[in-house]
Length: 68
Image (tube, rainbow, N blue to C red; front, side):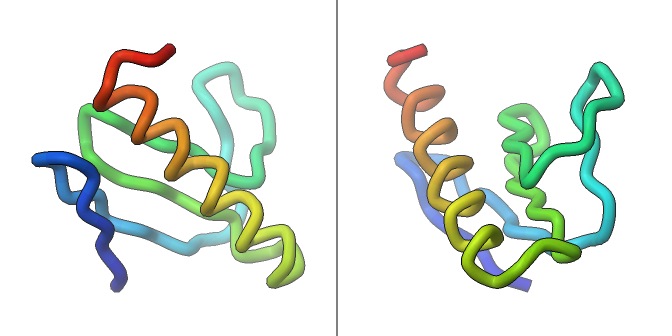
């Protein structure tokens, strides 16, 4: 299991099949700021997974610094 430090928060990076948001929409990935988890759908290509990870890390940074 991988982790990333963003400010004072340590996010766990999880890869699993079939990731859905709160509205039951299939997603490439999600960032759960309360649980400090970034979850990436591993059924997509490695390139998509990498893009999703960067995207979710940026969400976590925006949350930490109140940019959203």
